[in-house]
Length: 185
Image (cartoon, rainbow, N blue to C red; front, side, top):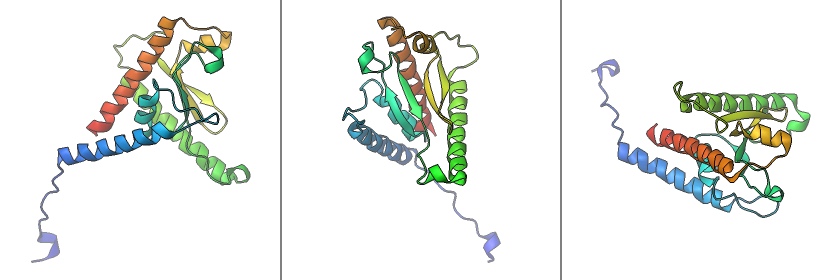
């Protein structure tokens, strides 16, 4: 019997095994997120951790994040996440690495924009809470946050507690969407 005529058995994928593997990755990512600290030794805000985890397991490299704070000294008054591919070592003096970094960031941005488009179905009417992308730097990094926060940022105003909760709720809904997408793939 020739090789061409040999029929290999179909590959059987166990959905439970696949889900368990994905859950393991989710849990490992959550453990890593728990120990991340910033330059001041502060951990990731509790109301943005699930968002960060959902970004990471879906292939988005997060750089910074915040759950939003009404107190000006604690950060911005709305939730946000900065996304950027890791800086390639030696990029400062290497145009090829700069371009590669830019292309990786643009690819992440395109993928995020596509997910937002899917998240916001055509029949869904959105207000200030709608999540948008904003350029951050010259190498394609971006920030995701609620569109109503643009007004806050430009006027140095503080949102009401209701607005802050609305923005947090929308960010959590997007994280839930990403989590569901992750486990269903």
